[in-house]
Image (cartoon, rainbow, N blue to C red; front, side, top):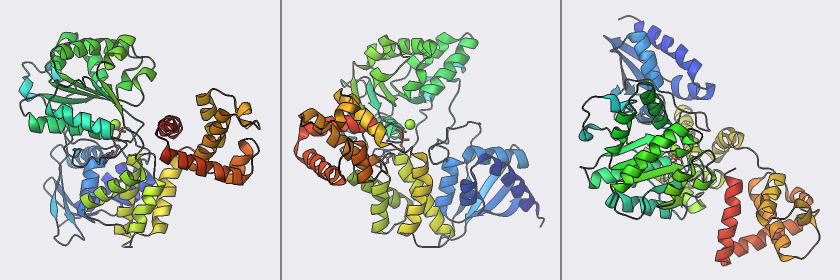
Length: 473
Ligand code: ADP
Ligand code: MG
């Protein structure tokens, strides 16, 4: 028995170290113990099964690269778990191509699929409709897409589409929201459910960015027609993050043709965008006007109840339970982004496994401070005042005036309420900035708005409009 496995793994680690943050390295890689190498198979020990899943989901490309580099093309990675009672073992599937993924706000790679995206599917001669890989992520289903007030419309439209693709009036379905609120998840859920109900349909999920890259390559190789033909074969075309096409007239043009063809043939189109379609700068009007033919639905910030349900669902998925107070604490403090919520949970799970400590409020607090507060830019009272004034078309000076004019009073109260919710400023400081008011006035304003939100539906709608501008800024 040689020590080759130790040496190989340490070479792997040296590359990994350069490619992940220090925090992620110590959380996810340092605890791994190399056990043996037999032929081209390296076996490692990981703390739990959850770990393997996490590595597969987030670091598969990196692992693939280092294994290929230090063991060879046929290199394989097997694992054993250290603490799981049933001593799980298995292999980590290493896919074959290299792709890089944008980092998410907590510094871990965004979730990715293991299957490979055919970068140039249309150049495969004689490719048949049935052979097209849908590029769907099986983990993103309707079952685990928690329903809430925030996503009800988009979710039910998605379900409707899966039942009758191309036959509803939601064509295209345009889903928009800020980042980390479930657009991609919902896309995959729609695709998977469509396939489940209509196995004969050809579904394709593609990121607009990939579409654009493919188009550029196709153009270079003079096979624009093949590119268009390929996309015209699809029954349900899902394009994620359409905003990437902004300022890319070539891809927009080609997409316009594909879009029209699919629409005319009653094929379904689903599009996501990180902003309301008409706010997409650099996008051709003829495309934007097409988007309006169907349904535009947004995913709003989840409320406390929904956030709590999402946490419970993720705990259930991972077979772990945090104490109620911890669940409550996360749900109350991580409000603007579901991906961050998951990031916090993953870190908590990892930390509790390593330190073999129970998850406490203090631990949670630290992780949230480290991951969330640092990345969410601090929203200033000034910014909130400007946004609210903008909405009511008054100037900040007018808002500060000592007047009883209803609109001014309302704008001021809303600004105070939102400042309390989104900035770290004290009531006294908020009062000072909103027209030199006393902190008790701010307190009163917050109560008034909270009350109005509960009783006045129309007000609630208007308020949500303003809040969105601030929360998604
Ligand atoms: P977006 O595409 O809008 O940036 P994602 O779809 O990638 O957001 O969602 C971020 C993370 O939050 C994903 O892991 C997703 O599974 C999770 N998520 C979003 N919405 C929900 C929901 N309603 N229920 C459960 N998980 C959700
Ligand atoms: Mg997305």
